[in-house]
Image (cartoon, one colour):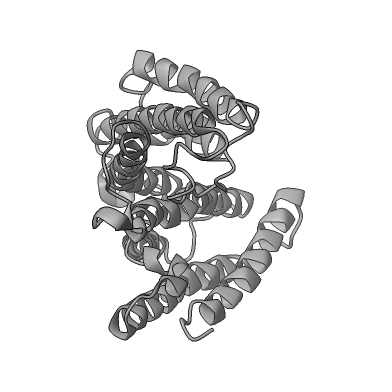
Length: 295
């Protein structure tokens, strides 16, 4: 999903929406594209190396840090695949940000950029802030596995929960990294089909910025069962539920754009966008409930 929504649509639409002829660094863009299949191949290879990783997709220690496990080589391969994918994503993010900052058309200020452009910009910023944390976490896994470090070994004052914090600090923003470009595409589809700007265009951009900020501060709601103290659970619960406010703003603005138009739902794309809004609203409602630590 991510190479398609962020990389694919970003590469195609960002120069058009910014009024530039090309992205800032075409060669870096090409390298980041070529690294993606390599990373994908390494991750798939990890399922067949020896007996497969056997660690789950989260790579939690001690399953991933013990040489006594079935296949430490599979852990090596999937970690290298994640590192390669991270390098590709960081290069793409830097490329997009440089294009928006330096190659915009004259007179096109940041305040009047489209929602689609801002979705790519905010996604790139989130990637640059969170990917290094995941990279550090998986490198610590490798060093525990092969170089006798003890970051995650509780026998020697290590802490396996530390890895969970490092992993989910990237893992939760990643879901917003996936959905923010989709928000931009849906906004673009609705705006184009009805030949008008979105209702509350600036508030849509601010709502996405709020989602990006809050989404980077709620990672431990994936860790309620690890023994977090009451105050910590209360903070992550309240912040998780708080994300529903900017999300609700976006949903109402989309619906107001539909309702204020003189056209009906005449295109399949506008119908599919409406179905996306309905699906996303139902899913977001369950998130408000399940975000409670007491649940």
